[in-house]
Image 1: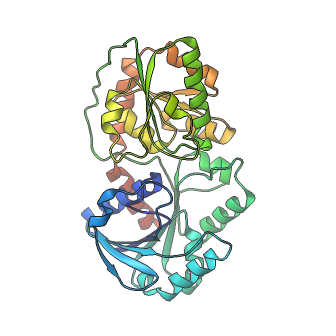
Image 2: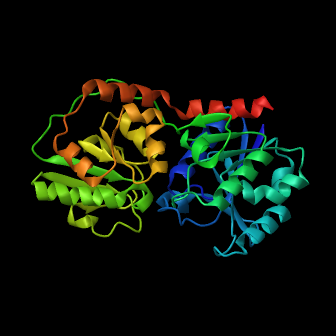
Image 3: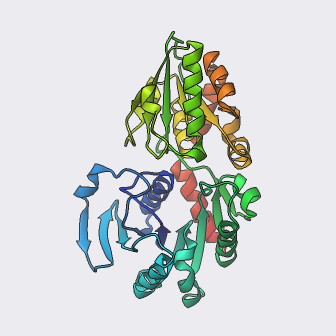
Length: 356
């Protein structure tokens, strides 16, 4: 099949949505599908991979750049600044280049169904689907965000949601639920690391309020006050990164966090893909929530039984200070994470497209 993915950001940007879309696209190409990705030519959602400069590219118009990677055609559009008028420019640019959609068998939007909205009526009988990847960084979700999701759901042939919590907080009916995937299977058997007098702590992800960075920062302060000895490393960046450097090393976004996860005794992680990767490597995950939506994000997921969850810095600091690894919990978590492959996620997409 000829498939078009629409996404707000794509490789070389680093982020959860970018990883999800690229991983599924590569798996679908292996299965014989032809993939085209339409995205924006900016990398504001994360640090870019340095290999981007090595990609073969062709400037076909002043509005977009075309690149070929992983046997996938990628169109990076220039939509301009984030103003009220931006959506009109997006609609204009995509309508002007509607031949990108005309021969597609399947069009699948990743959150940004609104980009395709005018073309939905122009290509009324063309199959369009949506993946809802998560939530806005504000709590509670705005009425505007919920309205856009309702419109996206109603005008799509079907959808996939990333996380069960989306049903409750956005009122979304879903055909499938996923939590992302891992690249390859590792051994389910994990070894317990010997507890040393100095705890090796690692924080991975965006350094923003919605993932509880301020709670992790306060936790470190309280651990210091308690006299708990620890080392601390950050693989991530964001607006709340200031002040973390007093507790350890802040590396920014790192392309491959695997070596850091393997060395850590405890990983602070609050996103599905990060937790999946940490669990697969057999390292304990500690997560926090600061509002009811994030509570459901963590508690209403399969991760809940394999990770340690806290609702405050006080509770988190106490649990870190007395932590002792649970071999069965770690092995069960690794076994479960190993089963959540990108092949399994790609199966959901193919099943969704086959239902209608």
